[in-house]
Structure formats: C-alpha cells, structure tokens
Length: 276
Image 1 (cartoon, one colour):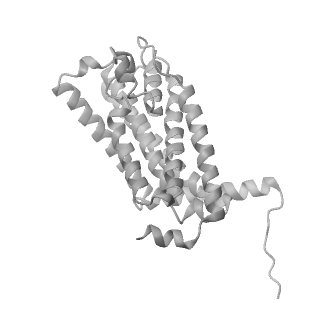
Image 2 (image 1 turned 180 degrees about the vertical axis):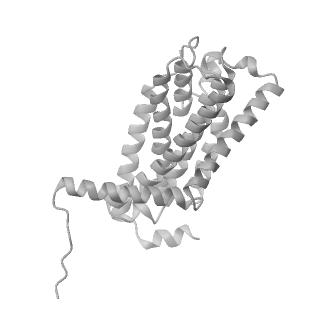
Image 3 (image 1 turned 45 degrees about the horizontal axis):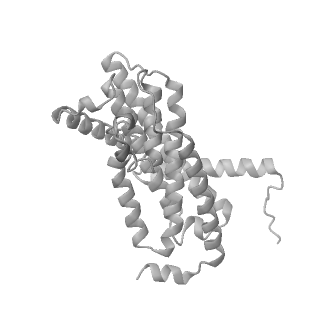
C-alpha cells in the first residue's frame, strides 16, 4: 500500500506550515526552562526586580546618584537594566540554539532557522511581558513614569536584543573550533557587560579615555541612545545607532557563512573531540 505524504508546493502553504511550527516551538521553548510559562514569567520579573533593587541600593548607599542623569532616577536604572538583561539573554539564547553538534550545525537550514527563532523569540516574549508588568506596577505605585520620547525607546531596545543575537550566533558557530574556550569567553563577555554596558555611568559623563574602553560594545550605544530618548535634558554625543546595526549585520553574515561551512564539513568526530 502506497502512503502519500502531504507536501506544501506553494510558498504560501510552506509559510503557514513554518509559522505553525514556529508557534509550537516558541511555546515549547518558553516552557522548557521552568516547566511552566507562568513560572518562567515570574522568574523573569524576579530577576529584573532583584537587579533593580540591588542597583538602587548601591547607588544610594555609595552616594553614586550624582553620577546619574538629572531627572527620574528610577527611569535611569530601568533603561540600563532592561536593555542589559534583554541583550545578555539574547546572547545566551542564540548561542544555545546554535550549540555544536546540534541545532544549526547538523540540520537543514529551515530547521536551523526554526530552532534559532523559537529560542530567541520565546525569551523576548517573556522579557517584554515581564518588563511591561514591572513598568505598570511602578507607574501605579509612584503615580507615574514620564519618558521624554517613549517611541524613541523601541529601536534601542530592539537593537540591544538583535545585537545580542548576532554576538550569540558568533559564539555558537565558533564553539566547535574551541569547545571549552568559547563558552568561557561568552560567560566572560556577559559578566563584563555589568560594567562595559555603561548602564551605571552615562557616556556624556565619561572622559575620552574612558569612552575608548566602552564604545566597542553595541550595548553601550543602545543604552546611551535609550537614555537620550528617556530624558529631555540628555543628548548623546558619543554614541549612535548605526554602529550596533552595522555590527549586528556583519556578525550575522559571518556567522551564517561559518555555519554553512560547518554543515558541509562537520562530522561526528567533532563531537568526540569536544567531549575529550
């Protein structure tokens, strides 16, 4: 008996199938880390609130509030912490989605794309929802939050996420070449962002020497530009949005070329070497 398999022969049909697979993959990815989407949302909110409380206490106890932008101190903290979290988690999600000997390196391109999108979009969904709830609670408790240009915060937030994906992709596709060193380097990068992101000190308040230690980081540019949109009296002079865009596009293109080479040349022996 001949068994017929349904094949989508049109672009529209294939797109619908892909979107359906993507939806189920996102749901699965959102539940995978905590076993429950609601619990995952709670964890995201708790992490954000803990970091907000820690930095609020740090700035207050050490008398560092004078280093913040003149205006609402809570908004200063939120613009730094939210973009920092969404960038670092995008790095981690993208890297895990293209882990060696799995996902992007051994399957067809459509499977690779599905795996990557499910991982990064599920994380973004939980984070955006958590941030929205935190902002709503703070707004109700404090009687309001005033952003200078709320719409201007969207692009820096998106680029903080997109640049995290690009950097995570590079870490992921390079891992097969140095399976022990590259993950350590990725952890070091995420830890370094605690300072190198510039979330504790605005770029305009830095000396020229200090800026050279920070302006390599796309997250530094996105956070500073977000603060330019959040505060009426802050005009970013040393950062721009072109650098994160061009860097992200360049890293994605390089990562895809390396991934294409790996799919053609990688063998099971790579996996055996990575376990040694």
